[in-house]
Structures are given as C-alpha cells and as structure tokens.
Amino acid sequence: MKIAVLVAGIRFDSQRRIISGILEKAAVDGTDVYIFTCDSWTYSVFYHNKGETAIFSLPDFCDFDGIILHGDTISDQEVVKSVLASIRKSHVPCVSLNIRHSGMLYVGMENAYGITEIVNHLIKVHGARRIAFISGPKENSDATGRLKAFKRAMADNGMPVPRGYVFHGDYHPNSGKEAVRYFSESKLAFPDAIVAANDEMALGAFYELEQRGYTVPGDVLLTGYDCAVSGRNHDPQITSVKRPEIELGGRAYEMLKEFLSGKEVQGEDLLCTPVFTQSCGCEGSAVKQDGMLLQKNYVQERIHLTTYSEIIKSSSADFTGAMTFENILERIRQYLKMMEIEEFYLCMCVVDENFGGEIFSKINAEAALPDRTEYSPEICIPIVYRKGQFSQHGRFPKRDLLPDEYTRDGKGKYYTVMPVHYQKRCYGYCVLGNSRLMIDSELFHIFIMNINNALENLRRQNMLNAMVERLNRMWVYDTLTGIFNRAGFFKFAPNIIKKARKKGDNLFALFLDLDGLKTVNDRYGHDEGDAFIKAMANVLSQVHRHGELLMRYGGDEFVVLTHGYDHEDAADYIRQIRKGIDEYNQVSNHPYVLDASMGYSIMAPVEDLDLEAFIEMADQEMYKAKKEKKSKKQKEEI
Image (cartoon, rainbow, N blue to C red):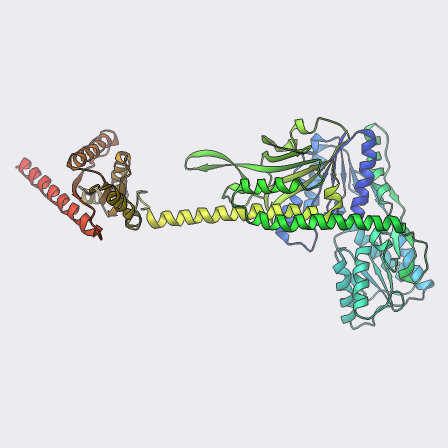
C-alpha cells in the first residue's frame, strides 16, 4: 500500500505525534508513506506562504491508495479548498483529521470536554473569577472549537466572557507573551486565571507574567492544552489537556486499511482528558520524565543543537557566497555528509527557455526567468544522496515524485517532501527518505531555507548579470544593426591599436557609405530604409573573419578597423564586400539595389594616434571613390 499524508508544521509536538502514530502502523504492514509538509502559518508573509503551501499541489493523488489529510494545520483556506477538490477528483479514499468533509472518512479529537473540565476546575476548585483565554488562529477549527467550549463553559457558570479577555494567537510561544501584554493594556481588571489553547502559548504567557512580576499559580492560574513535553517537564508543570494524538494517527491509518479491504467505516471522535497539575495550583499527578532519562535527552538535544547550529551558520555563509549553481550543489553535498541522513533528493523544476533561437534545458534557479509559481511538468535531481554516495538523475515526470529506481528497493519506507522555493517562486522540492530529521529537527528546516535563499541569490545574480549585459549591449551596440556603435568602437579600438604596435603591424581603416539611401527612404519609406542599412551591416558581418572591428559610424556610414593589412589585403577585403553586396542583390527581390562607396587608409600605429583623424583619412578616400563613381555614372548617362 502507498499513502499520502498532507500536514503542515510537523515540527510541532501535536503533528509529530500524529505522524508517529501513522508511521508505526504503516511499518507493520510494509506500507510506503509520503508526507507532504510545509511550515506555513498565519503570521508568515503572504508570498512565503504561497511558496510553502504549493507543496500540496505536487502529488498526483491517483498514484496513491489512500490519503490522510490534516487540513486544520494548513492556514490558507483557498489551498485547503484546492486540495479537497483534487482529492475528490482522484476518487482515492481519504481520512480527514479533526474536520468533517463530505465524502471523506473522519476521525478527530473532541475539544469541548477538556476545556469544559478545566474551566469548571478553575472556578469551582480554585475560585477563579476573571478568566481570560488565549485562542489559536481564527480560521483554525481546533482553535475555534476550544474557544466555543471555553465561552460555553463560562456561560454555564454564569460568567460571560468580556471581549478584552480573549486574544487570538498563532500557537507559538510569542503569542502567549503578546496575550499577557494585551490583557495588561486592557481597561479590564487583570485576569486571575488564563486558559491557553496550547502549551506553547501557555509557556510564553508564563515567562511574560514572570517578567511583569506575577507568580504562577500564586497570582495567576495558568493552563494549556496538548500535554506537550515542554509543559510536562516545566517548573511549574503546566495544567493541560491530554490528546490521544498517536492514537489518532494510528486510527486514521487503520480506517484507510479497513475501507480498502471493503469494511464499512464509521467516523469517530477520540476523547481528550484534562491533567490538573502545578500551574493551576494543584499538586497534580502529571508524570515528568525520569530524571536520568530527562538528563540523557537533554544532553542528546544539546549535541544535536550544537552540531546543527554550526551547520546552519556555516551553510548560510557558504551558500551566500556561491556564485554558480554548481558551487551551491558542491556546498550542499559538503553539509549533507555531516548529517545523519539515509536518503536525500534535491528535486528541481526544469524549464525550457528560448535563448537566441536555440532551446536550452535549464534548471529554474539558473534561468533569468519571471516568477514560476507552479511545479514544472518535468523534474531533475542534481543531488541524489543514498547510502553515503552522491549521484544525479536527469528528467522525469513530476507525477512520479521520485524515479522508480529509488523507491522500489523495499517496502515500508517513508518519505518527507518539502518545498524548495523563495517567496512564491517555486524551484522544486526536496525529499528525505527514511529519516525523522525533518520531523524532529526545526534546524533542518532552516538548512532547507538556506538552500532556498542561495538559489534566490543565484537567480538574482543571473538576472543582474543579464540586465548588465543588456545595458552593455545598449551602450556599445547599435540597436538597428547589432554591430558596434561609436561608443563600442572607441571602447575596443585601443585593443587593436595595442596589438598592432606589439606586432609591428600597420593599421587598416575602411570607411563605407551607402549609395542611394535617401532615394529608398523617399520612395519606399523609412522602414525600408532601415532594412537597407541592416542589409549592409549583414554583408559586413558575413565578410568579417579576422577580428575586424565593425562600427555603424552614423546614419548610413560604416567603419572597419583592423591591423596587419597591406594594400593587396585591402583590395581583397573590398572585393569580398562587393561580392557580398552582389549576392544580396541577386536574392533580395527589392526594386532597388544595395550599393556603397568605400575608401581606406593604412598607416603605422604611432604613439598617441589620433583615431578620429585616421578614420577621417579613410573617409576622404571614400569621398574620392564616391565622386569618381558619380562622375562615371553621369558620363554613361550622356
């Protein structure tokens, strides 16, 4: 069996335990699990969230036997709607966690009982009268359910909740701190009890209360929700609500399995129970971890933090300094070797872009392209890391996620899939195989963000280089003909003069003036006149073989500069131009003919050469040739 799990914020205790419950059951059956995740929250920048949640558009659900959706963790409701539409279109069975959706299986954890019991306990056991609530995000169903339960329990106790006693946070500790500040600035009396919608916010509130001189539970009673490890091992222990999250993940998997075997499956809610302990004034019976085990876990965590903090800091500096895509890849490989990783795949979008008429396949990070907000139809893997060895893989269809050769060597594997992006610009995704690093370590996510930033820096550098190149071309090239303008000519002419002096060669300058441009403009229009000028530039470019410097001197005048020519070479060069003009006229089908008058000058490259005067000498020779041509034509007409 192969299932997809869609969940955001897997580094949170709650999501982590749910995933553990899924993986434990899946491992027994040899089921492959693909966890699509991101770190998108309401406080994040809008465009960053767009890039993060794009990961949920990546899977082709038709390729899976079943799906588990924890939609309540995805902050963008438009993304949730899109995911639901894709799942329904696939007709693949899906278990929705905590939110009921039409046509889908359901298993959840009720929110009312635990909150109700905590409110009743604070009022009836501890005599609390001014109880404030720190809620989760407004659009989060768990948060909404807990807030409703709180208000209902307060009303049942004859204590309606003033608006100033409710603060909407985002489940992070800082929300708890902000809530305490909010309650302090309110015109209402400061609460004698605070109920938080999760332990993280309760802990944030605790430290802000302590900062302001309040004691817990002496001055303020404090409770949380989720029974997180941090709350259980805190001093004082945080009164909380224990949620059967591991059981929820396991039950979701079992429901899929039962449904696929043809059994009838009913939705259900698992009961959450309060745990009364020190932060509400009870001695409590919450079990702390064994002291030795806690110490061991602490040491292991410190080692992990020290190791990965160094990796994060070093990689951030190294990635920023990478000037090419290969530089970035080289440095990613260097840091992957330092981590406890079994499999890692850096999967990049491939884009086809037309450069100068030729199609090149380029990885999105290398191409100076507009924003790409979706995954490309084809993916390539510039870094494959398996069993301590690095390799690469070329193009394959996006729907495969990973080529079959990397996923067929065993059953019961799990893959964590995260977006690689900058803001809403999608670069690809990365996959961790059979590793909990993405689940258990916030620092690994920061490592991926360092990769994101490095790719964006490279893209911007390429964009800047392309812009500079365009500006350079605008400055040194004639926009009509594509050959050098005066600025370009006089920028590079000193190189030719220098070479001539070094080799002891003569300098050669040819001055060419179109014949009949005014007539073409007057009779056929200036567009045709421009085509007339471009045709001459093309002839000169085709004859250009030996490093000659070509310039549109102005209007219908052109200059060629080179070294090492004698008079015989000059005559041959002019013959080649004449031949090019004749060949153009034979195939042009224009009612007029391309023609030009030419003159040249040859001289030794003296020190402090006046280049303009040298060109003027060739111009005078051209003028003589034009005058002779006109005189000859007049005689022929007579």
